[in-house]
Image 1: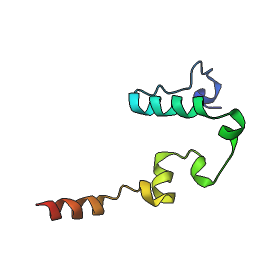
Image 2: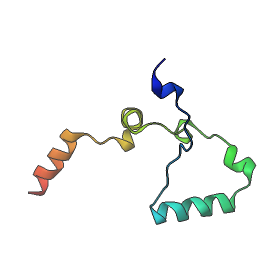
Image 3: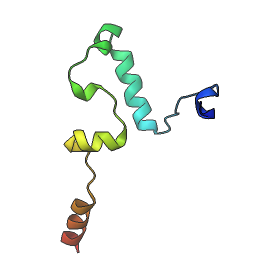
Amino acid sequence: MPESLKKEVLVRSTVEEDPELLKERRELVGSKTPAELSRIGGFSDFPLPEKIEGLVRPSRRNLRSTKQKDMSKKR
């Protein structure tokens, strides 16, 4: 068995440093009940890794070819 599967992980979380995002989340949590927060409205409510999110959610796509086209238009 690999060593990485045997090791105990003490902390597995990330710290969000963007103050605007933190403020938005605090307001959302403060203004809704737990029942409202737990409601799933669609697939967009599920967190996805960035690589998969770019494939699945078109609004989050970050295509290199599109960026190059936009840059050439600005010149």
